[in-house]
Length: 332
Ligand SMILES: NC(=O)C1=CN([C@@H]2O[C@H](COP(=O)(O)OP(=O)(O)OC[C@H]3O[C@@H](n4cnc5c(N)ncnc54)[C@H](OP(=O)(O)O)[C@@H]3O)[C@@H](O)[C@H]2O)C=CC1
Ligand SMILES: CCCCCCCCCCCCCCCC(=O)[C@@H](N)CO
Image 1 (cartoon, rainbow, N blue to C red):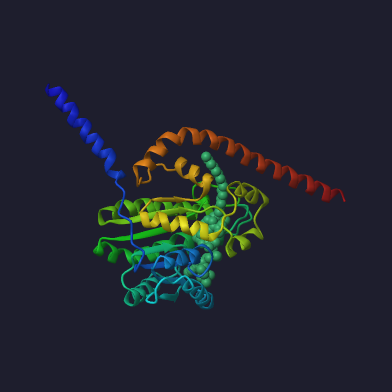
Image 2: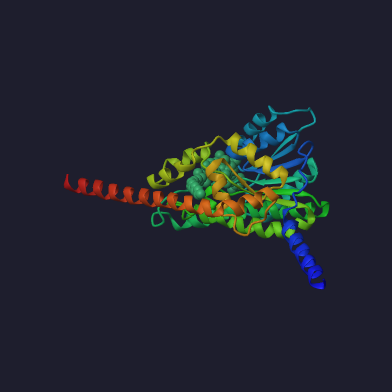
């Protein structure tokens, strides 16, 4: 008898342990909320600002170029749903000096109230072969993509903790889930965000602050156009696997996930598989998500082996082609 009771207690405690991380957070109300978007003057960031504005938020756009900021402000304002809404522009480099970042966030909070949601979207990409990439670039990408997300987050977190509410979004990339040919400098700067997001989420959960880590695929923005000018053929062919998406599609999904407090945010079927496969020890935010990961992991790993095989064969084919054209050039 005693044994049965003990077994029940143990089973109950185990169940509690399994269920407790699965309790979904309460959604954030965007109507009237203050959303800060770094990198909000272009591409994905601008679409995120538009999407939040469309849902009634007050927006602070953060980027360096003031003219671009003003143009983006006009574009965002088209999506107003009431006449109280405001778009504020702040020009600052998010990656160079923490005190500067802290000051502009303070100013934004004085004007539009405490930050309810911070979206760290300022970032850049560079593709190229490891040995051809200037060593300085490794540092630059780490500074902008990683430290440029640490600084704004650090500047908003104290107030969020005091208010016991908030959302912090990090915009990583599918190239932050898998290391790809041509992204030896870029991928690590996006992988770093995952470590930050996981550690920060564990610290912030008791304060009702939820972290979202977004993994967009190739998205049709000025950055992608710029990157494509010098992208190795291998990188282009491999990235094509998950297609090119529109910034407003990516923004809609990201904002929905952030509002719900989901830890991971992915786009498209490849994005979904990649996130389930690489979930590791990252937090779960719903029972369905946890169950899906458990059930699909083996299957997705099997599919992944085929993908990896095809990526290897792309790399091999490109190498052979290059050598052949080099040999042909010599013979001429
Ligand atoms: N496009 C894509 O295919 C994908 C993009 N991503 C990621 O999404 C994010 C946005 O990309 P995307 O919209 O394409 O890029 P864009 O180049 O279109 O926009 C980048 C934004 O960041 C701002 N920014 C750049 N550097 C700084 C800085 N030092 N300080 C403050 N703001 C800065 C830019 O303004 P300004 O230059 O005036 O400062 C601009 O507003 C990046 O982090 C990127 O890595 C992820 C996956 C795919
Ligand atoms: C079950 C396993 C499924 C595996 C699917 C694998 C798909 C890999 C595609 C990688 C695409 C990388 C896009 C990078 C975008 C980016 O960050 C830059 N464009 C920034 O400008």
